[in-house]
Image 1 (cartoon, rainbow, N blue to C red):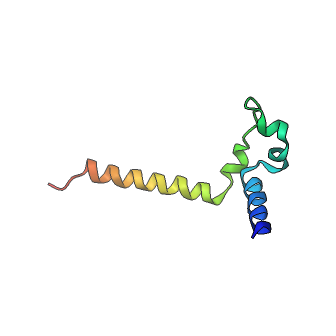
Image 2 (cartoon, rainbow, N blue to C red; image 1 turned 30 degrees about the vertical axis):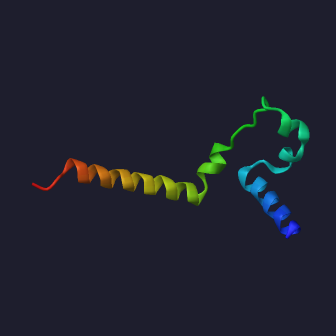
Length: 71
């Protein structure tokens, strides 16, 4: 169980782009340490595009329902 938790924590760091830097206490404890956010890498993920498309479709559907009420 403990090994599994360690693996999950490692994978979470990889997915979030934290990697080994978070394990370093000087980086983790410093509130002013800024890391660059890899926006290009994030925008290439299919899950991000699914969120963008679903948000657009939801807003468009709400607009159609509110702007074109039946008469």
